[in-house]
Length: 65
Image (cartoon, rainbow, N blue to C red; front, top):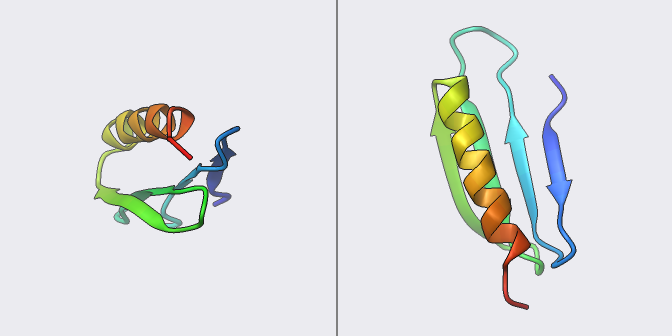
């Protein structure tokens, strides 16, 4: 599947990948404006992955440069 990628004005971005098979894990990652990995989480539930995606987007939106 195509990953969800959102880049914010601060330069930080959020990536969410969906598994290609039904028993896989959803992975949500938060990267800083410099390209470093800030946080990563794996979820087996789509709803939980969406909650983490919302939280990571809020962090990326307010990230200090």
